[in-house]
Image 1: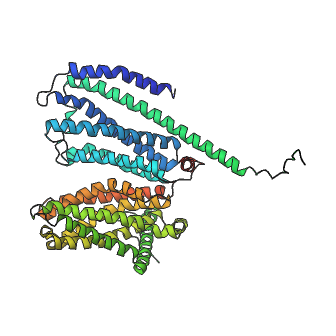
Image 2 (image 1 turned 45 degrees about the horizontal axis):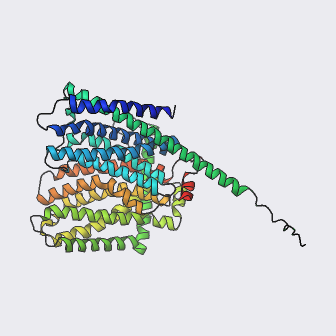
Image 3 (image 1 turned 90 degrees about the horizontal axis):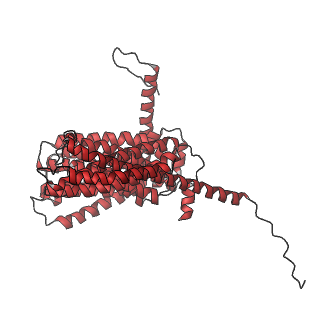
Length: 239
Length: 266
């Protein structure tokens, strides 16, 4: 099941993705004001939602890791953080492309852009601490992930609290049915891909921990085994 | 020492209320004693105060040299950045050293096994960091006022400036102390402190930055930004206090070989 589920997710995503691309570029009408560049919306928005979801998953898993020392939670936290980096990179690339075409400026330092950039930086710091931190730094990384998860509501409410150039959160609700028909397949395909990658990375991390434990067990067994006493030198033929 | 507890008028004070209030007061008293002890030790050798103040002065001179040609109209845009970048640099230096004494003399372990609330250790260290940051900010603010004409509102509105600097440094100290403690207890590399510290303190520094700009330009939005900065401070301290014990001590570990084996692989 552990191996089948990611493959099934990836297979389903591989089937849905071409349908999604066809719907976006051929079936959905071109938006009046923004033109063809609006098509990037169907990739930018799902990636942003998945990034926020994964950041929350990472924060919750990190909280469980801190409270219970659960290696499964730790593995989920690591995998989700790495995927936040990947999806966040997608958001931070597609967003400025769209912004450049519609606002005339790729980066306006608006509150939602800054809070999203901040989320990406926090999870980049998380990955750096996990890779280069000494023993015990996994607790520091977990605390970082919790701060990262706290940033998610800030991203969501940024357009309500501060004056921003970003569209409001109500835009998704007011989309016509034809746009939703293109958004759903893109969201499902990207979500399935992310879940498959998450499961694969979790499994890799758990295998890594098991290998580490086996290594230490082997090492301890070697350390406790008494060294063989130096025996008599083997006799040579001349003696 | 006897402590009188008064409940709200008409409301019965339950035993658990009394215990909670007493625990809170005990934690605060312990935090105060620990902070006084740290400040007393600091007053004896002046290590942190002198190094951080000198560093602030050096950063100020570098900023003065770099931006001396800036026109008066552009200065209100640049001065807030100079102030808070200086605080960020000095803060990283201070936080890198704040647990060094405990680490060098192995007193952190003694502090952890002593009958002291963990949150008291956090509050005490954050307070000492805040005191040193405020001292360094004083140097920076005075220097900027002397070097840049656009920074005159700092001198004209001293109470507003004091509130702004206090709020900005508090959030920095709140978040920074948590991670400095974590690095001290995990025998971590101090280079990671900057990696962690800057992304996490960025929101409070951003609020402080826009609040400073509105102070220099005389906008009414100054108090709004100050309020948002205060909210960030509360969040930083609540999350910092909540996470301090798990980050510093962790939970009783099952037998795990991760870190040890990972070290060997490298």
